[in-house]
Length: 458
Image 1 (cartoon, one colour):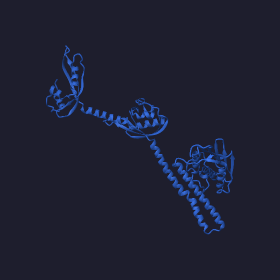
Image 2: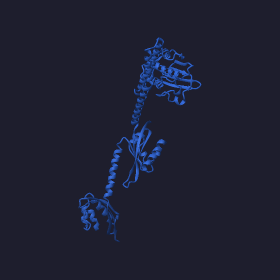
Image 3: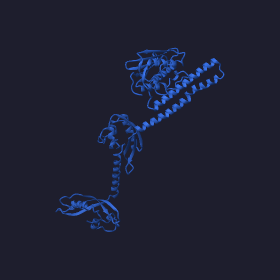
Image 4: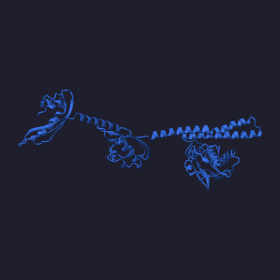
């Protein structure tokens, strides 16, 4: 063998110095000498005549280890004997070390991805999966191999989610990171909420070659956020009620006490009656507030069932309600024997809220009709009033808190938008339900149906 003088730099020697075959061979790493010798022997073997191609390490005199790629071929005479060998030695140290660093990073990436509870995916420019972490199998119920090579929009995802993914991946390939939020029904039929961060991945030349997606289940986090928002809204609503709606009856009490100082007997009687009515109204507001807070933050209202006579509970309650509405007419109709299991105080709340609601929004010269019925399996309460119907758009949300009857309400009414919500919660605590029918022709009827023998709640 003969080496050009430029080969000296591969051995850590000055370029002018001549490199002998023995000097070169002595620098080949001990672990690589056999492979290099075998490749050279195969290249000069007349029976094989293979192309010489081998990579090995050189330990230079300067203490630097280099990786070289040596390629060449042998030339043979007419008798098949090797007469000449020509080859090229290329220093591939930087390239191989870069490749090794890439392999190391890829191994670290896969170790992280394959042990992460998050779903990690990699996409090419055709939006095809080139990698998907094992966590995806638990969500989809499908093996990862079913996704590899397929575009994101051909994996059975809902069309809206699929379109959002396509747009987000394209944005990442344009060099813009993005966040994608979506809902997905995981394996087993459970809907979950997810958030994906999409980032472009670049090669050493700065070109975007793939997009990496990190998908995290944020269902619990989103639920906590909604609960926090609900608590904030509740606090705001309670402050509004206490500062505005509770002020009216308190002002009536304060004004009444001032009038009593110089009032004659008749004025004292009227004023005392007004003070009592205002105090009862304030007490009902406070009760509504406490029930509202219990229902929203305490997991539902408590009920204490016992055997009751529904008709009698209703009659007693109506007597109390009518003290505040002496000029109005309420008719009470009864069906069945009246016996059933329910919380009598909560039944009184239902009736108080529904009847006050009917008297507030109903036509003043028409009676409010209350029907209590004991059916074979249910207790039923109906409260009907004539008058303008509840708008259809309001009917859909009338049992939510802070919903009022709008322009139909009498100025100064005690409604704070909690009554119907509390009716719904009491019905639910008994295992029952409440509904409303409201038309121009038939008027408005609220119907509460409770199981006669008791159900969930307590």
